[in-house]
Image (cartoon, rainbow, N blue to C red; front, side):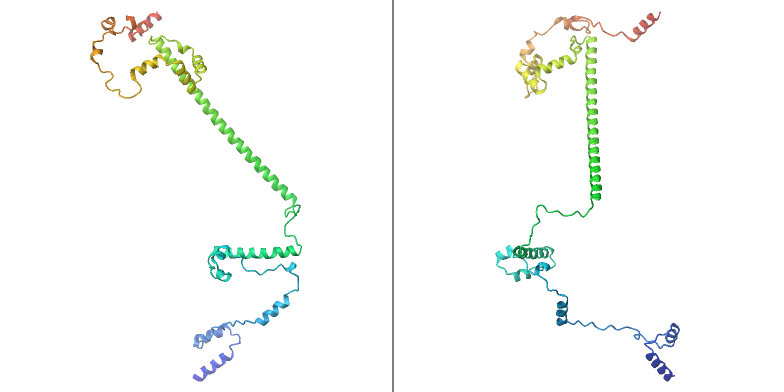
Amino acid sequence: MARDRQAHSDSMSDSEGSDLSDSELQDAYSKGLLKPGLNVVEELEKQCVNNVVGLKQCLEDFKKDMEWVERLDMTNGPAADIIAKAEGKSVGQECSDIDPDDDFQREMYFYRQAQATALDALPRLQRLKIATRRPDDYFAEMAKSDQQMQKIREKMLSKQISIEKSEKAKQLRALRKYGKKVQIEVIQKRQKEKKAMMTAVKKYQKGLSDKLDFLEGDKTSSKAKKEGGGGLAGGIAQEKKGINAKRKYKNDKFGFGGKKRGLKWNTKDSHNDVSSFRSKVAHSKNKSFGKGGKKNANKRPGKRNRQKMKNQARK
């Protein structure tokens, strides 16, 4: 039995390079002939060879003998840093201080290297009489066609027209709002004037007032504005003309601030002063009399009397 197994293993090792079918592999696995590690592919360690001679030979093969104007290759270090130069550092010390993980320092190093290249290349090009600046009348062909540029121009024009239309619409809406606001203010002003006139008419009907200034309306206000100028100018003009009698009386009575408590208390002189006493008014039997003892003629009759008057009018 051991001899059979050894022979089978030898035959398996001989046939490693041959292709085995699935049934044969299953039979071998069931018999225990397959052991772990037999089918593992071992990767060899990669050996790096620094073939300097071969690399130089490859470089010489694809190098072409061309002038510098055709190649424009430059090998430069960074331009001198003003701060490092002031501190007395050399270029090697300066390069060793650069942190490769610092983006700002790395980008500044690239910028200074490009700057040094430009400073070395421009004089060299000028010695070779090669122009380094674009002439004023330089004409470069557009990458886009005229038809495409026409489409872009039309699109931009339509966009500008739409923006102008929207701005006009906004202005019209603002004007409408302002006009509506002014209209509301005018209506409120008219209603206020109408209410004040109706109040003055009622006072006149009841005999509480004997002035008819409310009939003039806007004429008096416009006349006052013309004379006084309205607002602050009107107040200044009124002060120049003189203080109103009513205003003067109130100023004398109430004053302009300060202590007001106890101003209406009686004193010995005010108690003895009876010059303003009117016996007819004080001893009048009918307390409903107005000025001069005249009865109010505009007194409204009672409800029952009004009903009687209506019934008599119907008969």
